[in-house]
Amino acid sequence: MGAHLARRYITETDTEPDPAKKFEFDPTFGFPERKEREMTATQEQMNLAQVPVEQRDYCAHHLLTLMKCKRDNWPNFLACKHEKHDWDYCEHQDYVMRMKEYERERRLQLRKKRIEAKTEAEAA
Amino acid sequence: MRSGVSIPAAVNMAGVGFRKVVRALTKSKGSGFSALLSGCRAASGPAKGSLPGPFPQTPEERAAAAKKYNMRVEDYEPYPDKGEGYGDYPKLPDRSQHERDPWYKWDHPDLRRNWGEPMHWDFDMYIRNRVDTSPTVVPWSSMCKQLFGFIGFMLFMFYLGEKFPAYQPVAPKQYPFNNLHLEKGGDPEKEPEDVKNFEI
Image 1 (tube, rainbow over the protein chains, first blue to last red):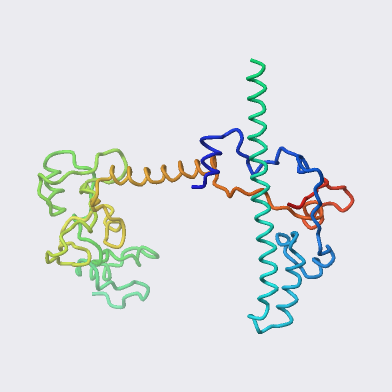
Image 2 (image 1 turned 135 degrees about the vertical axis):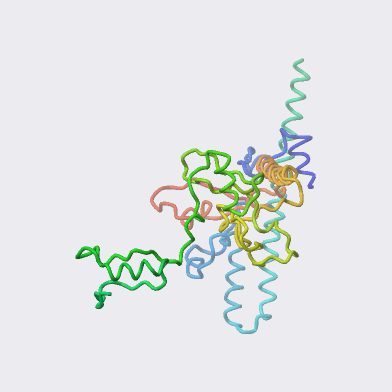
């Protein structure tokens, strides 16, 4: 059930990253420059809209426009498809980014292991 | 005959021994409270000699006790005399009324008992609304094995699930404002751990 689980528990138990623990490698490692993520919605805006804590992520500005659209168009619950799609797409991109981060960590771990094996083989 | 029965003297016509009643009323020996006491007792209880008695010591006493309880001498077995107060009451098998034949024409169908049958010491516990000693359909040992085997297996699997959790191959979700330090109730004065999130 999931190649990553087989890797984590059976085949590559030492290199497969554990999402529960903090990742070992620096986020900027390997990048010449890495742009910081921009947060569009302010804390004050989110507080006024009473956004739940779990939803106060980097897609919150889409959520705020969606909430406004919903409130303005009630009872027409089919009105906010565009805003909903924007928010969903943002969340999807965020999830894809998480997958990529996990894969990056995994490959860096494998690379580290390869380098260590190589230095050991050369030393021996 | 002396007439004029004193009013406080209760006339117990449901009493045993009518003669004794009359004699008591007419004699009225003594004064005060003893004049009120009637010389007979109520007939509403069990007859004399049919009440349980002390533990039978001799075979004759055993035979008499068995006859009293409408039992055969071979079947009669009193409770062991350990000073618990059972007396000569018979020790019947601890079987509830559920186990008796439902199709036989009992005198008392709901109690599944015939008139005059000796009653178990705990008969009120063994009625059909209460304790049921019927044998189980499946042997007790196999029931125990099935139940505890299942519970044990489930506990073991839950333990394995804790040890080796299943998760999606994604990094943890990134939150702004130093992992929402203030929103999660963090101290506004204390500087939180600086968390930088980058684009991909």
